[in-house]
Length: 247
Image (cartoon, rainbow, N blue to C red; front, top):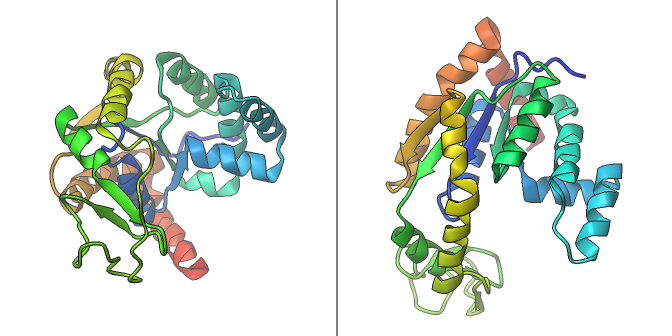
């Protein structure tokens, strides 16, 4: 097993629509970390035909949920890839206490741990409005919102001029409220779990996206420096340069 003792492991917690994916991507770009989301990991494993990916494909084709064991196996494979030595941001995993315990065991086997579990604190009613108002342009994929980002000309995409706007079937108030109930029942207990482990930090995620990003960066910077040690700045600069060269 790889020695992950100097590899930062950061996790973002929060309900659907809290901005975990957006903020994880920004942290990835700023610090040179690797964003790991469950959905992306599953799709990549299936596409690459790994053993765990084949198992996941079989389960999904049968219309069943992928088991925690398979997800952990896929995560173990991904952590073994060289780029993860820069550090990782977990986005959307774990979702339950058993998953968190399995993750702890996986990380412990590699001399690692979750160094920070950052909870993006939001209000349920605001999440219903934020998610149910989302829609995208069917022509170019540009994202819009009924309240926060309507097109400049009603019914016309600002970017490509298309009038084909689409909404996800589950982006409606009733479904969003159901997802929030599921979050509070299954995932919110992770807040206490990581608080007991001394890894929990919280942030008010109801403000402007850029302001939230700045606060998160201020939270994460000392964590990375503490885990990586004296080479933190050098490793971050090197990783960011490599990413820029491949773009």
